[in-house]
Length: 259
Image (cartoon, rainbow, N blue to C red; front, side, top):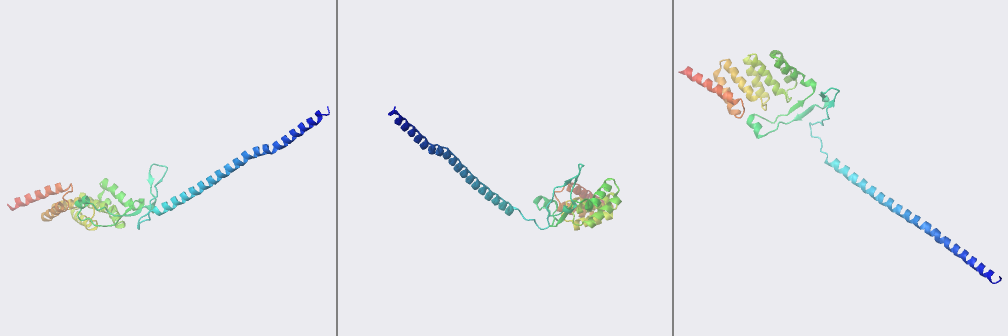
């Protein structure tokens, strides 16, 4: 009994020492994964911070590039805002943004049609106020109220001499005189069209009307000269066929009278 008691105490002491020695190991075993996790999170945060910095730098580069590539406004031009749509199906353009300066395009085809074309600035004003006289004149013209139509066309040309529709209004004025058989005014109106709007595509038709007006006034020599110039200056225009036919008829009549 006396010999076994000390041995039991020794065993108990050894077990206690072993347990005490194992406690730090268990703490380290618990703390080690947490430290590793914290380090991994810290690395992830650093990587995310670098990525955010890189993206901010890329956004700044794109903003600088887009600002440098934006073309400046040209002189005499306005940026067109999209049309304002009302509740109905009609589209209303803002009046303040309706004036634009345009240049007629120079091409081989246009020169062939109108050899008198020059570099002339015109204005395209689509506001309702500026176009009112023109549209009203066209309506009266279509209704065969030519005298009233002439007044509106004249008002439009006077108020908007450089408008892109000004030459058309001048031609319709001449055509209204022609339909009223006021041939002297046809000659005046077509000469005005030719002198004020030498780029107009209505010149061949206006010249033909002037030639017919001379015929109606029995001024055959002037009629032949007008038709001859029309054939010479606008050889590719569709109305040249009618002009040539009329010129041949006048030439035959002249030869018959001489005989």
